Length: 401
Image 1: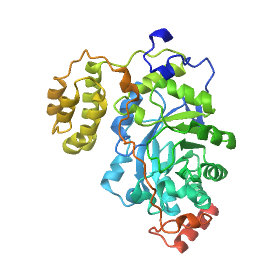
Image 2: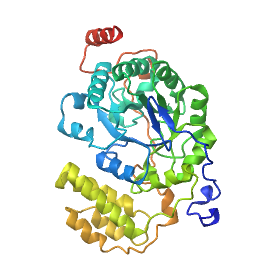
Image 3: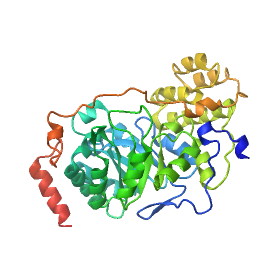
Image 4: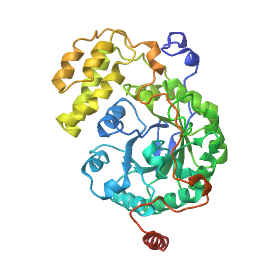
């Protein structure tokens, strides 16, 4: 396919495919990820069924949704299910949320015993209930706390690579990414991922790719760029513009798991085929629904699927009425019946390539604990289940080997 016939928006109309040897595999410890593409951990999204579906379309690293360390250690049934895998998922990658070093260390130890191949820690969640307790994207405000948490994970992980994923900072006046990246590197992370927005931005506006380039210029470990990968060509533009070592794909693949096939093509120097038509997408959507039902059970699986129906059909002309009915499905049979109302020959609309799916475009004032920004040199974890004495005793034992 010639570039003139390319199915792409104007910004990507003339982006050349990768040249032979232009991009190396992403090295994470003993792992080699090729193409250098990572599925972003997304709550309520990157469970095993979706990871498996994405993997079917293309190669890369597919990270679980955020798994809470405390819930995992306490044996919470749903947390355990979300952290679970099935035979053939390799490499198996888990993102962990927590702000207690002992919890993080113990969870990593258990995951390593289970055979996990990669663990990531969430330093980027901007949700109010998380940041107001000093977690998620609030943690990088305190570099010494970042170091303490990363140290606990790296030492517990042994040979398994540990990475972090973070945002630029709290807002445009409180930048944290350079210092947090530096201390994480010093504590032994294998790579640093940067969503090039602040916590205040949430998912609004354009990602600041210059920040990714800035971080790359300051670190020796691989830097993974995240933000505004809507088309496969965006990944090449980001890597060429910033020098980053891999891309993290988030909202761009919602309802579009075939994006990973397109990414594999452009990294191999090929022009990808046009996106599937509505009939082919309907088949993928039904496949996804069946996977969710098999994994979560009939009721929860269908409830999970409702939001996906909107993402799969977004942008198609005349689909609004069917989409509204799909959001009320109670069974696989309901979904199959509604799919029959769609015109299978309808081509994928060009404008839908960059249509935002999932999170909205609002901004926020980030909620932090009282006085949090005045104690940036503090390494005390937010209030957790363990006393300072317990944490110090466990860390001393870890230091002793």
